[in-house]
Amino acid sequence: MVQRSSLVLLTVPPDIEDALSSSDMITREGSNVTLSCTANGSPPPTIKWRRDDNQKININKTLSVPEWEGNTLELTRISRLDMGAYLCIASNGVPPSVSKRIRLSVDCE
Image (cartoon, rainbow, N blue to C red; front, side, top):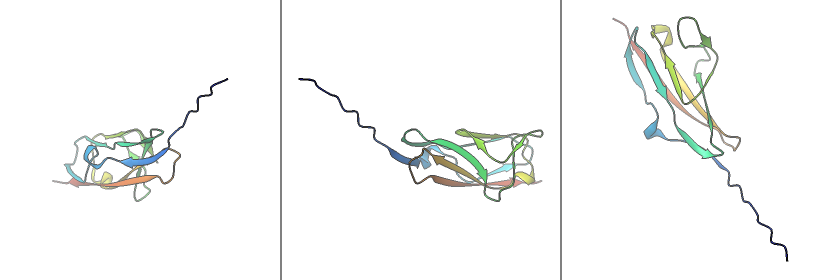
C-alpha cells in the first residue's frame, strides 16, 4: 500500500496590526519621520505606501517616488509639502487587500 501525504496550504487575507503600526502624527518641519506598518497573513503580505492625494512621496531631497515598498517609510527633512495622509496597503494575493490611513501633520514655525 502506498501512502500519500497531502499538503494543505492555508491562505489567509492580510490584516494590518494597528498596535504595531504608526498612527497619526505631528512633526516639526526639518525633522526625520519613520512610518511603520505591520501586517500578517498567509502568504506573508507585502506592504506598499502611497499618498492619499496621489502626489509623489518625497523620501529625501533627491528621491521622489509614486509608491514605496517595505514595512517602514523613512522621510528625511520633512517640509510642509510632505503633510497629508499616507496609505499603508497590505496585499498577499488573497483578497481583499487592506489599508491603513496615517495622517502626517507638519508643525511650521
